[in-house]
Length: 247
Image 1 (cartoon, rainbow, N blue to C red):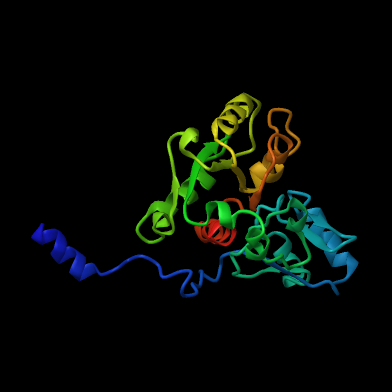
Image 2: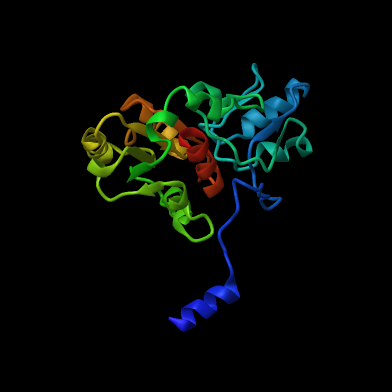
């Protein structure tokens, strides 16, 4: 016991002070895109042609963050003449259409004040469902349980049984083999319940979009309340979305 106390005194508190204090990410992190709507159509078309996810619309000059894998290909065109990625990790939205953006996103916290804060503001229990994910989204979600993030200090926890949960947190493109298991898990969660689509795979299919073996759109199976884009979403992106929406 004395050794444990000694280590604690030597190491101090390793938990991040976010959100009370801002936190800066490494400069190579790709977050919310900054879009130059004055860019020439020629440059934009080059970005459209190079995008592996067909996430860029040349007419509206927008990027669909629900499809984007943040690969950075478009940023390499014309030295970022049309798109460059900021270090802003606050990407969560309550509506799918808001992910099609020209560089701005609505205030997630303002939306949630009218919906879920009164229901889940003091405690939120989630059942994580990996619906054929590659484990990247799952790994970066698990990081939230480490001492640095300490998700449970906010009253948010991942639980083993959907019957103990307030909602489901879904990752992966939802393969046909996982469809029924996902629906059974959703049905087992008592009402009122929430559904979170995390990562571009569960939002749009991600790299697997168009495959006959995946659903690729969680909202086509169950109503989605919160979208967290990314490939995978950064742990801070998930944390910000959860805190803004439910706390």
